[in-house]
Image (cartoon, rainbow, N blue to C red; front, side):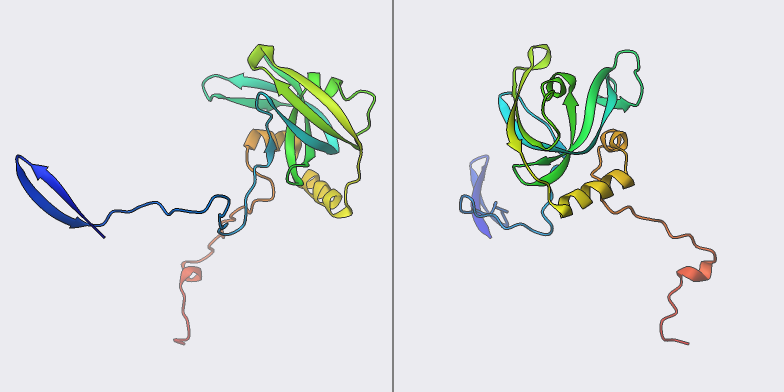
Amino acid sequence: MAIYVRENKGINFIDVGFIIMAEKIKFGDMEQSGKKRYNKFITIIPDTSVTIRFVGHQEKIYSKWDPDKKSSTMHETKVEGSVMRVASLVIDRNDNNIKAYLCPVSVFNQLTGYGPEHDFKISRKGTHLSTKYHVESLGKTEVSIEKQAEVDTILTSCSLIKIFNSKKAWGEKVKVKEEIESRFDILDWGDNE
């Protein structure tokens, strides 16, 4: 509770009220409430880099910008005005989570000569048409049996194009509406029988 004074035409009023203040925290000390969520897509912003490992298979898809929706739509076949991309699941070595990556062809072409068993550091410089990517192999790495099983589960339950078109994280629970056959199905009779 706080007391504050407000002035109105030379008359001072004292109001007693509640002021909600943000909680102060110590730097780096943040409790997580509930399950920690993470972004399930890799996006490389200008002047940064990511370290990833490709897992599963890769698919050639076509991305077309829709100015009305202000987003891209993915297509399995070439559509007028679309740009080819390579869709893949990757392990983000920053947090060791599986994420979806829409890889530019210029990046994928730099992977020639390496196998998918390598970790790669991908750096981005510039924006829009002046964007340049640099790819560096960090050597061969292993994927745990658990991670590979997770990748297999994702790829058998959802296609890569669906992941990018829906922009929803895979593995999220879908609410299923229960059909009601009779109006008596919704009544809770309890122990009153």
